Image (cartoon, rainbow, N blue to C red; front, side, top):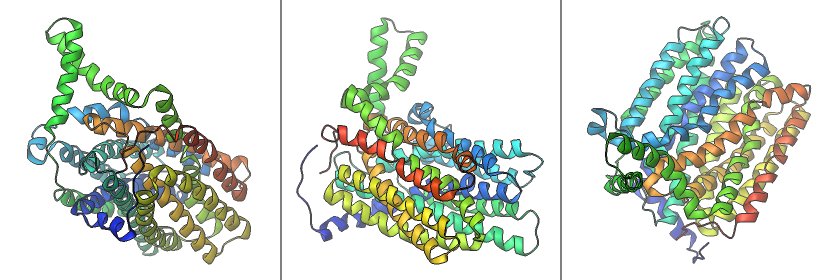
Length: 458
């Protein structure tokens, strides 16, 4: 890892004034918004329809598609959407198509009763998750390609802005969702959640309009490098016909990004990186999956949750994400990962105090503030870390692979969070202590490989 000279705080902050950061902010918001639809909104909808904690927890398995979106990421890198790609560009065309699928799914939810058609509700949620996960592949690639490959500090600042944008989409989307649902419920509408989903569809339309203001760099080098890989494989096959060309295209599309990653890092370091990425945010995911259920059970209303967890949490997240980006720029992304991991584990214990003390608005506010502070530090460091590892020839695929592995730990294992609370007989305090301990294995992996990771932090 290269050693670099620290800048002054003022010089470090100037990187946020780059116009590209505003575009990255918007991309982050587009990426974060669908999570509130299939996360908080869907969970609370099912809760208020009388479904059990375990059922809600297992319904969260739809998030598992984020863990496997790398499987079709190579297609996103190479396949062009007919007509739309020529009009708005390769990356933006994929995002718009996925946004349209999310919009149609929200409209369809308006006609479904979850108590009578739970399987259909979850199926539509799965469609939203697949569209969102596919969208994320392209959003992340477009975000990375806004920054030059040797602009390490701009990449870390861009990671911070992406996280601010993601949490803006997620938190403010949650404020809209919860307050709208609460408003229509008080007016006496029985289908207040279905109405809420229609209103969220308007936000999706606004996201598409905003996307048109994000420039898409023309990257002929990426296409040339991909073609060279195809030709090299075709040459080894020893013939030039439709079958060998197809085989070369498929092999280069799927195998090229993986081979590139292991060649760059070496087998030992590559496996260490994958282990760290998989384990880093498991504890946060367990807490996040059950947090809104915990808030509801302890006695907070939807409006309380909107104010403290969504509104107040968003402000805290924005501030500490920007500070986290500056910390990563000035201290290095590896050190930032260690600090944020320790912060995540420590702040989870505040929820144990809240569980054991009972409903307390001031303790709720403190827990949310410090949890969002830790999450902000952790996320910006994590995003910068994997962004600085990717090969620009396979931007979408390699980032999706690393992000998916991280998501795999958070989604597949965290699906059992509701069952864990039930197994603990509803002892939320012990549950949150367990989530705090979950970060330790990932930090062990990072400590082992810390000196050999190849990052550009100029």
